Picture 1 (cartoon, helix red, strand yellow):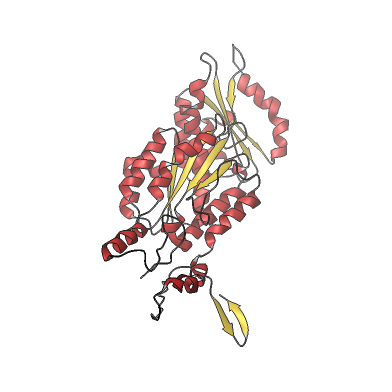
Picture 2 (picture 1 turned 30 degrees about the vertical axis):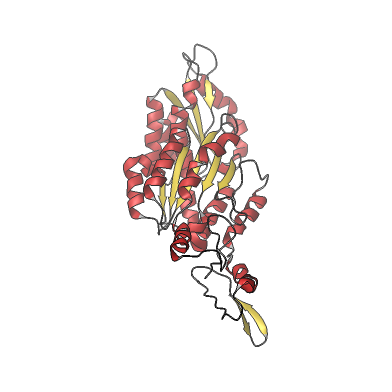
Length: 363
């Protein structure tokens, strides 16, 4: 017997005459039962060696199906200890014990479950990424600020938070750390009360209709931020998702263990983040494996969203048709006169062409 399953080391098959015992065959088959996800997470710190100097480092780990929960947690905690902000997106097939463990060890606010569409989950992530920018600003950026001068943060938003209570809590923590926050709302979609909660007082809230009007309020804002400042001009920080404080993001997932259906959810999630304004100045990469069919890409590989989408499209195609196509050639090694049998395993999403009334139909 032989197996046709792929050409990469992690999922490669074997020819008819490769193994002489059932034990060796079983050892080979055991490879297919292991997820590469822990190893992929373990590679995150090294991949961030290519990050921009001073950029916030963020990794989004997609979990679904069967994984080694303890190994995932161990590698995620190591990456977090290396200064990387870790977020998790969980598919409905994710191991519930792993999800519970992540909440218990403090990743609860960084865990997004599949209760929404991929787009809804991605929106949750974007909102949390920017909300936690307040915590990042407090714990990292202002650690480097000059002592003895006002510490001022300007938050700009054009919508409402999906979790306003958590946003208000992070803003309160920043203010308690001695950071004065000014909240600027753009468009009629903003919630004035939420802006008040972020700034701590209505006196530090400004609302404009368009981004073009920001130039017009520059003098007003300067007057407010510099008011009662007896010493040099204040150190200012733009909102975390903006141009002044760059963020580099790696998306981490294992297509081989997730399968096509769940991988499709991952690529939809990533594609949505490419559309949002907050990601305009961000740099992103994918850590997904080293095989050509599912290889990721580094932070500085692509210069346009179109090229990123073209790469993501690779993950949505099944290798099964090509593997079936290779069957006749593989049987060149069959014993003379032997009956040739192929067993094809099908499951999940594949592209199917059928012939009806002389024409091809794709479903």
